[in-house]
Image (cartoon, rainbow, N blue to C red; front, side, top):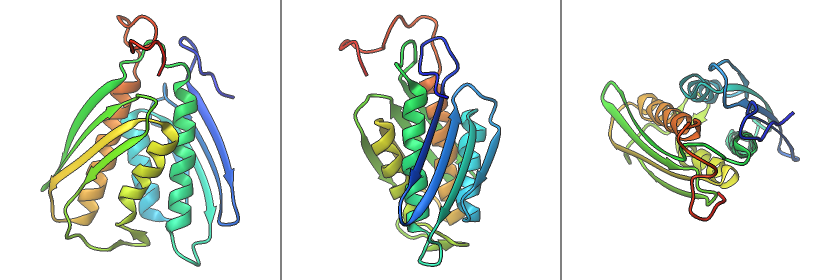
Length: 203
């Protein structure tokens, strides 16, 4: 049950069913990082685990997709549902910080993320061109698409930049950790903020 108010616990729940996948996502923005994720794609589960752990979001994901075709539909539909649940959990956005950034190193990789919970979806995403095409059953070209899908439904502005790195696992994981930290900071309530942090009065 969603509680999209400025004082209650902020939760979101989205169920998405198509001919290609069936997805359930539940998120609590005011959690402790408890994660329960099953998508059928081990590395994707690992990345969503990073998102919950480092964002301090309680996150439950159940995805069943046409993995006999490939991982694309499952990855995309899960990201869409996650974005929708995040948006629902944000509720009226009263009292949030709105803007945040994070830098996360992972050995030879540095990921830099800036976010605006603006109500307007926009993604800027850059990462090293030369990267292994697969990590287990995970297609590394889908990382950008995950953030595109998430941003479209969450209705946020997200900039993700990885200026250098070699190992594909590190490059992707650093991004998820940095996005988690930035989302956590931007969605936190600031006691000094009165109302919605926008001159428009709405986000």
